[in-house]
Image (cartoon, rainbow, N blue to C red; front, side, top):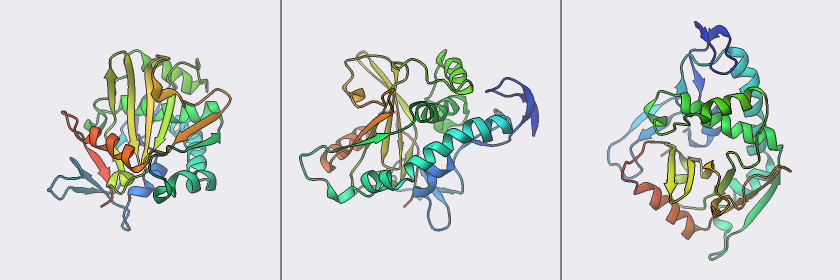
Length: 254
C-alpha cells in the first residue's frame, strides 16, 4: 500500500493498490465457468482475444475507508437493486417476450440519492482511471463536483447529471458485454454512454430539456422507468455503436 492523498476524502492515508471501476457484481453475467472475461476489439474481430480474471481497476486513488464504506455502501445498494427479483424478472429475463413494434417500460421505486450516486461513482472512477479502457471519460471541472457529491452523500441539482437506463433485447452478444464507455455529442446534446450486460446507462453532461433520451430519467421521488427496446431497436443501437470510427474495446463472455 502506498501512503498518499486519497482522491475522495483528501486525507493522507494508505491507498489500496486496486479499486474496481465497474463493480464486481456487474461483471458476474459476463464471466464464464472459470470466472474469466475476454477482452476483444469487437465481437466480429477474428482474433481470439485475451482472457482476464477481473475487470479493470484503478491503482492508488482510494483509502480503504472510502472504497469499502462510502463507495461500498453505494455499490451494495445497486447490487441489491439489480439482483432483486423485480429487476431480474422484468428486465434481465425479459428477452424473448417483447412483441414486435412495442416499447414496454418498467417502473421501479429506488432511493434517488443512493442510486444516482452509485452510478455517478462509477463515472467518477472511470474519469480517474489511467487505463486505456476508460480513456474517453474526461469530466473536466465536473470531477471535483462529483467527488463532493459522493463524499457528502448529496445527489445535487435534479437537472445535474441526469441518468436514463434502457434495456436491450437481442440475440447478439451485447447481453454479455461491458463496453468501453464513451462520450456522445450530437448538436446540443451531450452525454456519456456505458453499456454493461445488456443495459445502456446514459449520463447527461449538459442539461438539455429537449433531449428525449432523458424523458424517462431517474426522478427525485425515486421513480425510475426503464424502457425495454425491442429486437429491432436494440440492433439499431448496437450497430450504431459498433460502427464508431474510433472503435472501442470490450469485455465479454463468449
